[in-house]
Amino acid sequence: MTIVVTGATGNLGRLVVESLIARGVPATDIRALGRSAEKLAPLAALGVQTAAIDFEKPDTLVPAFAGADALLLVSGSEVGKRVQQHANAIDAAVAAGVGRIVYTSAPHADDTALVLAPEHTATERLLAESGLPVTILRNNWYTENYVGQVDTAAATGEIVSSAADGRVASASRADYADAAAVVLSTPGHDGAVYELSGDVAWTFADLAETVSDILGQPVAYRSVSPEEHVSILTGAGLDDGTAGFVVALDGNIRDGALADATPTLSELIGRPTTPLAAGLREARSEAAA
Image 1 (cartoon, rainbow, N blue to C red):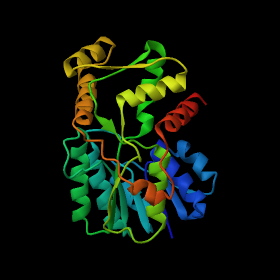
Image 2 (tube, one colour; image 1 turned 30 degrees about the horizontal axis):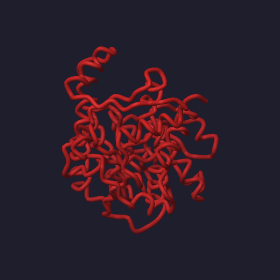
Image 3 (cartoon, one colour; image 1 turned 180 degrees about the horizontal axis):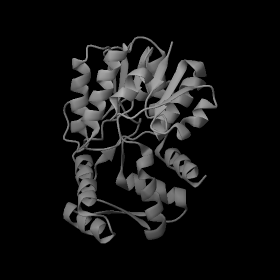
Image 4 (cartoon, rainbow, N blue to C red; image 1 turned 90 degrees about the vertical axis):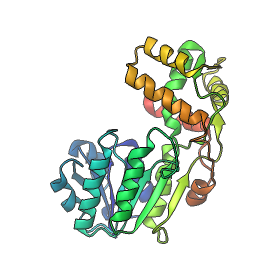
């Protein structure tokens, strides 16, 4: 059996490879793909097959996908380019005769106003049209996305957001990686769409309390209007586009787009998901290493 993992030089893809090995999949049965052969070298040292690919260069994809019983298509990181990149990967998977595709999507991608969802929605449509067996992993937010909030709170004593009382059912990248490893290495997932999230949906007030415990100092949550938030972010040096994106995402959270805490992720991985505090502590420790 050959399992191919794209994005293996990124945080999620690397963790999936490590989780597959921990689950007993022989390293030689795993093929890790990424843009940089140099960054793939640590995985090659474990005995994993590696190959350099570029989603924008289709000729690099077919040989890298050849012989794959299962392919994990980790969604690309270049917003605005992902649909074409994913289309290239899907076409290559069909040409290479890949057994099945597992794709990391966005929560409720077929019915959400989430600012990041449209490219995932389009990709899910392409996958449905491919004729290949497909499993969709609709990952909620990553806890690691809030490490920057911890660092800011350490300096300012507050967490600022326009999400009001909205909730985020985040989990750690390791949790999502373990779920991907389970789906890739076990049968019975063809056609499934898994809505994956942390076990607990937290508010930004909860986040501030958690960060206060982590830092050992008081941290307050300051809830602001979207207009105030844009002003604060641009005043801190963010460009208008980035500030608008952050505020739009907080609006999605305020409206409940990331609040759906389901048991599916913990059921797949056979354990509770990583609590918010533990996820943030681990992420800060890794960043400092």
